[in-house]
Length: 308
Figure 1 (tube, rainbow, N blue to C red):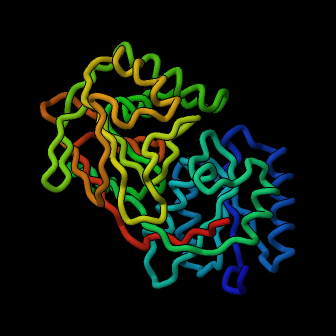
Figure 2: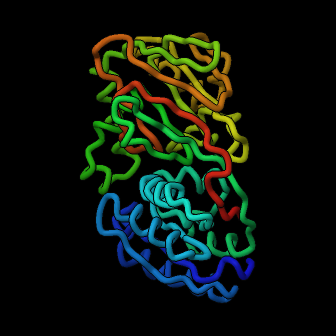
């Protein structure tokens, strides 16, 4: 760890992953681990949606040396947006202590689920610059958001929009499974257009990956690279819910690539637009974004990340 990372701030979402008081004790251990390496971290807890973005933007304005996030993918997304949107010439490096439902970035960085053990790995890490994805709803450009791990449109957007937040707080990732089962039987799987360069595809699902991990046990965009300035993009063309279910064994066994109706490609830009008036919803990092049309593009060197 370098002197530049001193004067740190730790942002904790106490509601992520049923953390509460037990996690605060683990965070105290993590703060001692950072302090032993010369990194004193103040603690700030979020109180509701959007608060992590405000805290992160303030940390950037205060020229903090390091921002340590403890929460799930939604909390991490808020923090990333607070950091990336604040451009004063000083970019605060971000570190992650896993503490939520899915923790995609923690899996990608091979961080232990145990918070003190993750801190031990991070204090021996290095800061690297990475690109972020930026999703812009064209009908509501003021809702544009950066994303760190994965975005998508179609049934996965519908699942994110339909997840019961109360159920999610009680059972975590199982809430997404329950929403997914319901959507298989009621979602229409309508086509929308995916455009990237000269490529035009009518698809019922698009996954825009910055990471190999998608959520739960699944890896979808398995050739995505967090340190590459491109997305890996998956499209599915089927309009059958039962066909979607038939893909699950191939997905589980990591054999989806090459399956009929499935296409993968890499790009730094992709545009998704509806083909009719029926709404198709997009999500970023497991959080609702907006209806299509939406464009997804790479923003190089948008974030400094402490990598174990």
